[in-house]
Image 1 (cartoon, each protein chain N blue to C red):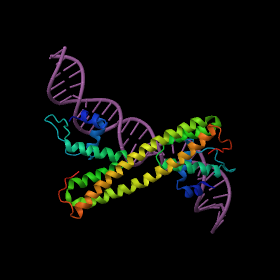
Image 2: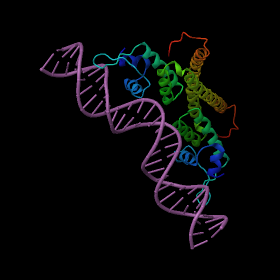
Image 3: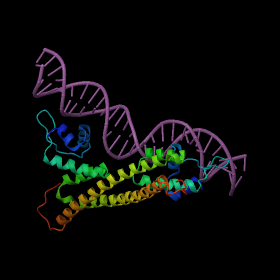
Image 4: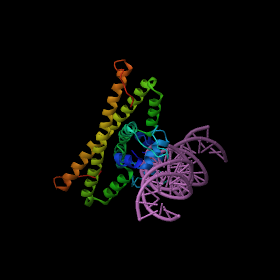
Length: 126
Length: 126
DNA sequence: TCTTGACTTGGAGCTAACTATAAGTGATAT
DNA sequence: ATATCACTTATAGTTAGCTCCAAGTCAAGA
């Protein structure tokens, strides 16, 4: 698949795809005789993984490190596992922060709803 | 309370507190005769709110807009409610992304665990 | 042949959210 | 008196993660 096909498929600009390659996130992407990228199955899987991680805010630096370990082969399995566990911890913390903030928003929205509907008149701001 | 006391209490640097004031996130902070900030109860509540929202990634621009509406008084209740509902939507989406990513990490970590313990030998990378 | 269009590269530019620095004031400790 | 310290301002610099641009190559269509 060409860069523009991949771009549509994964909703990433060609610029972003080239950028990911330049910084070592995407590796070993096949090219034709003119040097044009021809993404294969494995590239697609990698892109999907990156997209998932990035959507949750996992840092690019961390993903680069993970890819590096991947390419070093099976000796790095434990290191990779530790890396992913670390990221999972971070996401659990983030999940909690977001949960708490949603709760707070729910409360505030309810207060505003009550004011708006005239149910509550005694409101103090903030 | 002085800026350094607030800084410790909320784990924000004095620089950040001044920055928040400059951009209009913190307003009406009392000063003494020498122009030194003397944060009051209301300032503290505002800071706490901002910290909560920021911890979930709510953008500063949005918070500035919210503060602006707050200061315009009770006529903006509906607008404020709509703003908070919009942010809640965003956080629910983010929550889902993080949840899905954690699931994926759980799966990958399990695979690595199996490989590491010798339970699984047939593994294909990525 | 000429132009169009998709691709290539290297490198500069952008945005959000701080973060640090320089230059100065004013109150307290020695 | 002098030095230290916390504060003040305005402004420049930093980081992450893209995003855009200039200059060029190559193949296919009018």
